[in-house]
Image 1: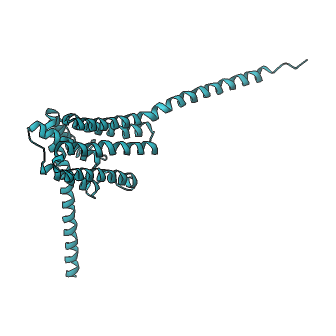
Image 2 (image 1 turned 60 degrees about the vertical axis):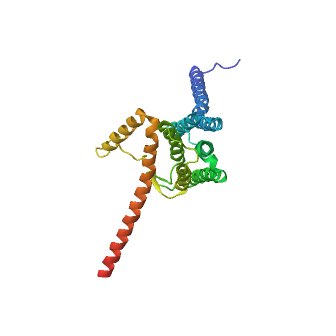
Image 3 (image 1 turned 120 degrees about the vertical axis):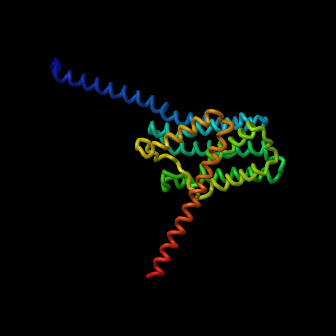
Length: 277
């Protein structure tokens, strides 16, 4: 006859098995949630890619306004995917590469084709070469960003960000349409494409506003300025988006020139002080 089991020992085994079952259930629930969380940032990136592709199709059809708006919406989705990845702590090398490839289509190929079809095709070889230069510089800008983002300060972008350049192209299309201007064979648009291409691969620094501390009293003015700009854009986006992007692009150049002359004056002051000694 087998000895009777100790009741206390039996209870311990049962309780232990219950806790193991609960832990397994908890892990199963977490494992089921993880794929959804990891997919979420990539859904925004896919939406960005879709808008870029839609812009290309609209450009081929000659639907300029739709193509321009699609580029702008792609920029909005591009702004969300990185933030969602950081909030959910789902950053990955795959997401970074997927985002870069989507950006190249949405902010490189799509605006270049839009500008070529809209204004530069009458220039023939010169027109498509300017568009190709823009695509090449957008690709170089994205590659440089991926390589150097660990070493650049977060307050500034090195070179014009490709979404800003793309939105500048799109806003120019909307501005011309709203003002009833003729864009075909426009020398200004040819200059704009070459200028934007150069700014993307330049070392001109542009504020990223990632360090903006709106809680401080000194920064409260920036909040009011941003609010005023948003109200201005909302009143008539087609007319006011282009000037806003032009001001942002010009601000980087202005600050770079000011920084150059400041350094030059400091060097001159040091040289003069050394001479007096």
